[in-house]
Image (tube, rainbow, N blue to C red; front, top):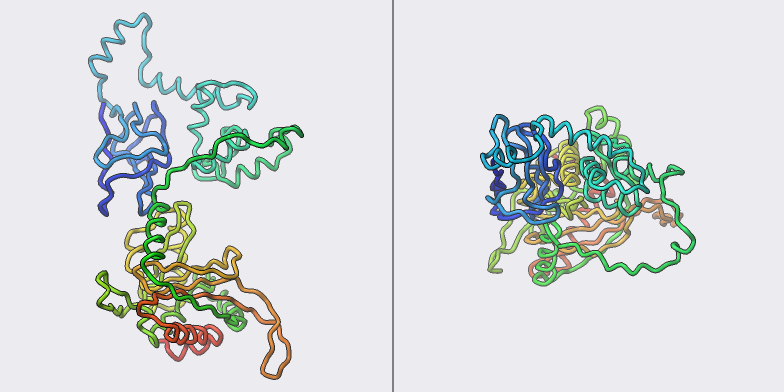
Length: 426
């Protein structure tokens, strides 16, 4: 047998959390087959098999920490003979042991037999094996357990039959899916102890960085309303053109492009203070980060060189980074080098927020949801306008109220009259 050592993932990472095993002991594996997903403090990483064989042992349980260069799992490679001790044990056994191929067939038959077992029946180890072999994320498995369901009974719509959260919710909507509950059980107060979950991966990094930012950087907050009625109309006119080129045009590319133009008027907002606190570094490029609520925790990938990109190029990058972040698979280069950030809390329904700066950057803006509200025009008549609330946070060590106000006014001007951006495009 051979041990598979957890490889060096890079970035100085020495350990990671095992998120999900894709295989179980006794499974036959092929070269390059996904074996396990691990979570570092940077992103979710998929580990694949280096050669074909049969998994004989999993050294690290799901949810536990694996060390770099330490054994992750053991396997018997194809064509590799069993150790002599195993052969001796086989010869001394009172019954003949089937071949590896027969072992695999037996395991598969156990899984097939265990799948149709009813929820009310004690299926034993066969039922547990079938439950583990169905591909599903830890969150989906927890949802299945909380609703007293059997994972193997739920049709999976994901890749390779993977059961998704939507599949579980759809299954629960079926009349016979949800387990019956008595009136007494509905009013009983649970005496179970609270669930304890270690803070690891991206969430641990987020906790550390937010504490450092909030405790070491004096935050200055500045709020404003922006009338995006004209911007919404322009976006609607441009959407068919973007769709024809295969790009989804949201408001984010407009926010970013206008921000890059405003940075040209107030470059100190795009600067960063060095660690010693005695130098300001002004960056010629505008790399705008966007906060994404991913399954691995908060990530802030950034679009590089927004000042040089077209709206369509920005839209393409926004789509790519959003998809990667929500899957927890953002490249390290996409997380580095940000100079200013946007948190679009309004996408989830929030109206106001007081954001925390993504150090070492100097400023971040939280965008609230857009609401149709009555506003007076220049003649005093009431009109229906699309109003978006925003809140800036600036590093008050070198950004004062006047600077953030002038910068916000420039950004607001480009968004309220988006056609004026044409005058500044190269």
